[in-house]
Image (tube, rainbow, N blue to C red):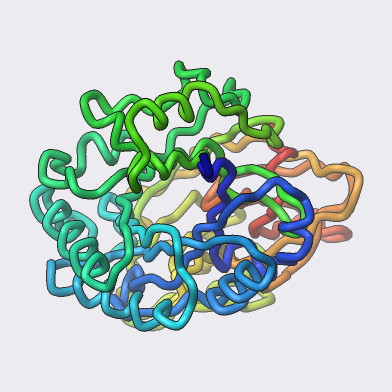
Length: 392
């Protein structure tokens, strides 16, 4: 029996991956690669900036690949358009694992989908994407957390499509028959083909964290029920993570709405170094007011990246207060780069070895830290760091 057991899923968030090292580690049987997404605010179809590097790197090193597309569709027509876009990106590659519909963000005010979809519409869009992809000869999966899968879709209408379920569990040992951690989807539990059990795994060749998954795909491509049950209950998978943390915001979140002119965003509370700007009337989130500046968290136009910084104008704060509940972040023994956004590409500073500062939350597996600038104790900087081990 050739059940694939150890699977990573990757996107631009992991930066440039050394796929030779990934293969040589012996820890990865397959990879699910993001090919693209629909712009979180604009709705523009975008290719993931690391897609070609990832798919060629994986295939050239003998790692089978699947694909996922991050959707923010608002109609079945847009979902079919996303599937066609996905096919154009992947049709010249040897994609032997499923193509996945990943729909998120509809409860987030920064997304174009905010408060604009229903369970019926989400289910219909999922079917539209999956049926279109299936027509090109691919198998498909539907991705979501346990809560999303159970409540945001009508699973009775999606019986043709197996499930990729995210359910993080700190006590999971990597043994598949440790069933108390396996996602419980009621009568649909047997439809789970892929289980994402952590977002902070570590793999040689990948800098920082990466999602880890158990795959039980043969249950859905021809294996008998008894074979699938034996696989799920008896196979042992390698465990390579020490702890699990779920995504979390520690501080108070409120809405920020910009005025009629562009508002500059700065990396520091003294507002000396510009890192971006908010468009006129742009809506985003504020994480509190510090040194008479508002800390804003917003999506960078056309990229899907999240950026954090200080703005001078406080008039955009809607019910924002000075109340916040930071956690302590203590850096490890080496210098930790600080980035303006969660692409991990625009470096704005660093934390010294063992430096202590404030952590405001975790967004897409990167910690938001607020820290004093050396020699300028009255000035703070804010940004993203990749290492989550310093949070307490």
